[in-house]
Image (cartoon, rainbow, N blue to C red; front, side, top):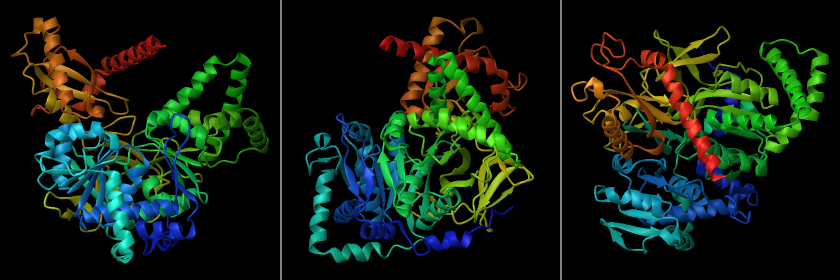
Length: 621
């Protein structure tokens, strides 16, 4: 089937010939004094804001500084830092140098840092401070291509010019100063360089895990990300000069698309929130017109409202529940394509004015007209609760390889439980086994190869096999039902390869089988079956065995990023054999059988985690 053709040519025209640097140049010229970026508030509530003119000037300076350090067109530049002004300056600066910027997740282990740094062959990395330096230090000697380490936190920076493992360490400010001097002496060189960038050239790269656990470098073009931004603008009707919040890591495609690329197209004012746990406070300050969230964010917002309701007076609670029920009734009629009776519409409007709107205003969500959820499935219960609150939450589906959303629900076509229809210009089809294939201008240029080439995974007809399995209803709405590739997607939207975790666990001789659990859950846990040749059945639950498994988990966690680490495990009675059903004749895990058979055990583990966290919180207070 084909995505709606509405305004496809308009979307293409909106970005024809454009690149992110050309739009940044436009903004600095036509909207010079408008705010572009506001950093996180300090302890006194003060925050630094850069206008579009200032942001472009800093980006130009850093770009020239990078070129002076030897960054060449096509080189990769790795960044590891939180959402702060310097992160945007770094990314835009690398783009202007015609290099390929890439943000690495701050949670990567040292081993994973070594893999990504070696694979990218980045000659320059930009790190936030001491914590990042310490995690990079053990692998610096194994990275011959890496020449310079730029450090943002001046107090943590190695003295300028000092070397470690043959790498030169430089403060961020020193690179800016070098670039500033170059710009002052010959500004035309900078202008000539970025104006050579073409829409089909790389704009950035993201590393994403495959089923083997080896990250893949997804390379996107300016055309990819700007077409996506134009479509999102067109189908959700983003207001001019929108206020937005950037709280997800820039290693996440959603944040890169919305805050690095879409913001330039729409001349947005982006407010930075380095700690995703503080997004509720940022909502209260900014009152944005739109918000993208992974399911965990929406679940926490819904839980916060429900917690307030639990403490409210009975009369207030009943008033909210009536307003919520009315709003939900009207919403369900609309999504079913039915007319909302006039008396119900009037009752909903009155209930919203008196009851629901004040609640949304308190949450900082009173201006939201675009609320989207993606990166992992969200529960229908959460969707319904937020719709009843008057928050028009819509699901989207996509991946790094599709520059963000490939399908989405819209205000005019929102079907709960589905991820919507293909966005304009995108084609979608299902394979014989239900695998979802997509085609269109949002698809990646290709995967970075170890030799620096970029190889496309598309077939001869331009289709990308996504690895997700789904169904299409009669109206063309897609529902994702499963994944061919063995990936866990946590409720926080993190993609995790379970085989990587399991391989680390089973390196311990006592562990026969290990199954990583965490799909749609906030943390990773594990089910462990011991090797009967190493641990006798009567010793399965002995203190000595428990200590041995504790060591196995600790050793595995040391090699994993924070989001991959096992938070709790349960030792099961074994053995697992093809006859018992948990494994195949080739001894591969039957994941669906395992999760269904041990559903209660799994639920109990997560209940224990919640109980322990609640107790820890109570102890603090």
